[in-house]
Image 1 (tube, helix red, strand yellow):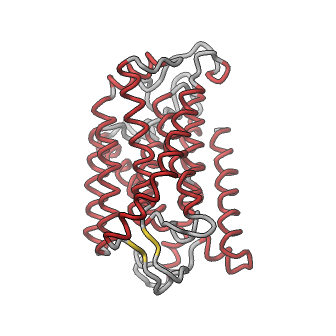
Image 2: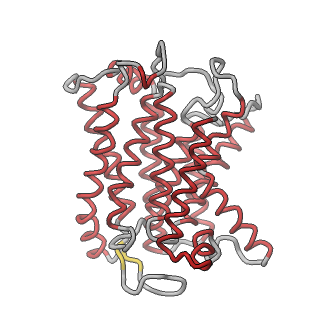
Length: 347
């Protein structure tokens, strides 16, 4: 997809050999991105929790809920802050030449060349988080919620890379890109049904996309992945196994949006690597949320129920009912996501 088969475009720093063996490979920068996002999310969450209590942005116990007391919906804002704050600081330091790292010039060039695209992606992240916040606060009906998702997907498709799947049609490219964004956003929104599930699978997906992009020398994409992974890992201690904060729709929308975008940005197919099966890599990275969405949609459709109305027939619920319990069910899905992602790295 994209970007799943587009030529070099400035996100990539050409290398003479395997990036992981090249002395210019920016290990320190990737580590700084991960740990900066981790610390910002972990330490910032208590502030967001207090804000949620003050504004009554909490998830109360009720039908289909597994918690017995109100829980603040602070995770989405903590994760967004964990990504944007270190990203902004790092970009400023690089631009001013204060931070000197290997490959800095290439990354600054990439930022300059794709400034509009990066701004749209960042604004899209903020917009999808705010849409989720509105849903958390006011329980939006399906139509306005889906309409907001469509508008954001259209903006991203218009300003950024689009999926082609080797079909030389701009109309097809727009349609499949918008469909992909909507599918992944809602897959993670649907999957946010047990402590640690959405955040854990999201962190695994972000790490896999970061590693794939880094191995191909696509450093800006890799940095985004490490930032997202760090922010989600920083949130997990507040959410798993016992939750003191939830992602909420704000967080699950953000996770789905970012992973959908990260699946579009890298070059999974190029003339230098002409294996067309490589375009399937994002499907393996996101196999668990996509399979969960598909089986839930099929189940509800066959039982003549609206597919947007929640139930307890997700993969996590089915595993828990088999006797694993909620915590072990989540761990099994994390492991499965990681194994599926290993297949993506092979592709």
